[in-house]
Length: 375
Image 1 (cartoon, rainbow, N blue to C red):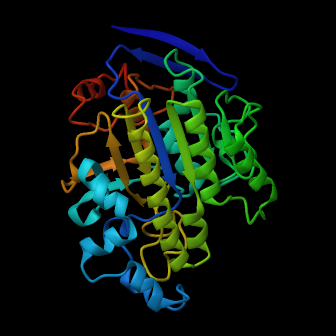
Image 2 (cartoon, rainbow, N blue to C red):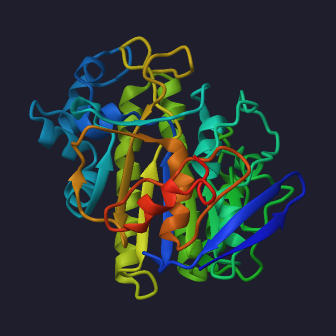
Image 3 (cartoon, rainbow, N blue to C red):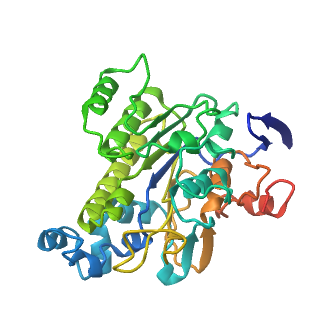
């Protein structure tokens, strides 16, 4: 049984089909770390970069922290939560050495087009550069926030201050805390008030705030308000890579691994979220794959379209590191998030079909019906 309803929004019309499917999860956390390469996820520290004094100030110390000749040990040293927990309880896609590929579909391979692709399932050719312009495309967060199940239960947090435009600040109805903005909640408890005070007084280094501030804000909000759909966008991996600081890039990756582990522990220790929550973790674009090009990314830079994906929690079979030859695209995530939430996400654009998850057999059937899922 399916019912079709029409959502008219200011700049476009969105058709959404409410699917009467049992949800495979009750809560979804989408976490991104900007411009973080698949090479470090699956191989750990890069031998050509970690010993290069051009990119590392103290090569001896950084090698002690993150290097080992054994690949398994090396990648666990960098990202222990990914390889001790997600690899055991979830799924990891994108190790190209096994022919398992995750790619962006958009041509430009930079952040705004990448996040648009993740959240709308559409590779909009008109989004060319990172400018503060409102996105006309429907995103999965606003779609879910317009459903009865998730209305008022969606929240987003980002280090990069362009997300108000990516999510269209003129149309958005869910809470979004971005950049160095304080969280405008009148009933904020002491912890949130302290975080707001820090954000008002800490030196503002760029248009990307410190990821720890983004994480602490999100963590405190989750503890107080119990949202069911949460986006956390972290940005310093890309910022540090652009600066050519491979040592700090690795340190930030290790810090983000710790944040994700802390958040997972919190959700599994709290009865509201325990055994009812799914994590989806990815990046918006890749980077150059050579010593000279790793600092940048664009349609001209080889490797920029190569990404990765990690999933864990309710509705996700523990397959570990997926080594089968297959191709997954970033544009499939919006529809996958919707299916996990018990809905089907369709827009007038050519959106990506859901990733076929073995534990959700009706996805394959849905994908065959062009009237339901645009291919």
